Length: 332
Image (cartoon, rainbow, N blue to C red):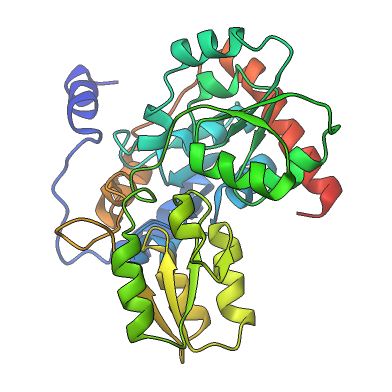
């Protein structure tokens, strides 16, 4: 790789290049996908253009399942870094690309592996369950990985006397503990997007829209979850808006999911839950680092590529595979 290009990727997160403004990026990306036998996996929190060009759109569990079974030679992951790492762990012989390698995760950052290792040592008789929103190195320290879709079921699949450490998300962990009645030892981490929803502003919004259903992701704080008509993963929230007869929904998660909700329910209204900040936005700044232009350059140039050390792949694959196996057994 050209040293200048590598330096630019390390500095900016991607290699910048001028793109002809008249170029039909959708058509060009389709051509490149066929030429390189590439598949685009996109998370629900990506911008609408990326969701519309993706071969598969989903939440962390669905994306992991898709990464494990794809026949493509190249996986282009339109999401954040830990998701691309998970794809590499499940498909180590495939090339995994991420449009912007600086698309990180505040939750993953809140749990440095070296500190978690020391935390884990305090509880030698505990099984470690980590939420998929963490680094490959943290997954390698785990016994089972989970997602917001299957966290409750995975904990319930274990013997009741099994002692458990749950990390890195304290809010999801508290929700799982409440749902299962288990006493979980929680790591004190959180997602910046799901922590900023304002209870006061949501209360006022509910008063203005008395017929709206308030739906929330379990990464939200307990005070917000207590107000919710439904709590679920991004896929769970999407399905709820399709099956519930209500015509208005207040949505407490990253706003990218609303694109799919509107596509699935063109006659319904979706209102992003207001955060406690001055910009009134609840976008994940990391998810939104990826753009259609970066996605095009990423496939065209085969960069940036996400790699994971072989020993980490070997250690991290086991807890991820255990999650996939339990999910398959439970029909998730």
